[in-house]
Length: 120
Image 1: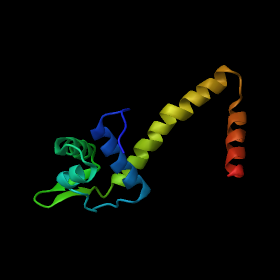
Image 2: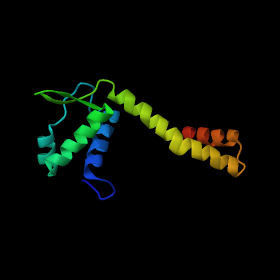
Image 3: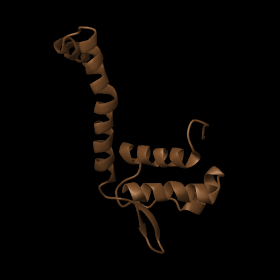
Image 4: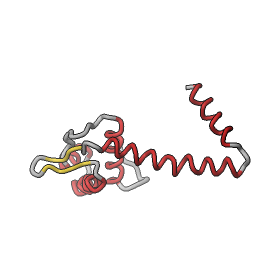
């Protein structure tokens, strides 16, 4: 379930974010408690708590004292916006810079993207 590429708490946070983005977890839906999560995945409860706190800090989850953790109502929209921003910065911007560097006109890049979309 977990790999060695990044800390376990980050992998937990990333999995929950993916579930929010996919719609598997909806706004205001309660998530497993840190203890339930730790028991289910056989990890240290402190690791699960660190992941959940990270998600609270990012605004993905919120706490209801004495009840548990819930998905923030705007979490999906916020995560999508962050993902789009990251996509442009990490994929599109370098692609455009590389195309310019090797002499591919932007129209050529756009035409190729459209071809790929049509092949879908």
